[in-house]
Image (cartoon, rainbow, N blue to C red; front, side):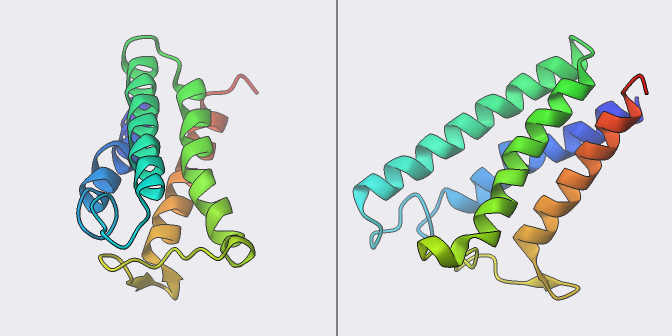
Length: 129
């Protein structure tokens, strides 16, 4: 049961918290962003929410906690990869609405790291090893 709850918490990060933080003038309605960039932002939010709903279905109705864990790692791990390579494509994890740090690590990168660590831990706990 604890594995299901932990994965659900991780899923809520990218299905509820991130959309709440990004559906505003700093992201989706940012007038300085090209229309195509806003299109990609909305596409990413819809896709991640769909993956999150799939994860919840897998966890709570199909008892496929390990598969849901892998999906969490892919979504939140993608945040970490984008963060690590941001200098290569001229991006930045910093935003007008989130720029705090925890233990010297950007809040978003910290949260994504915690979600990935939890999901990997749950996947290991749920394995037959």
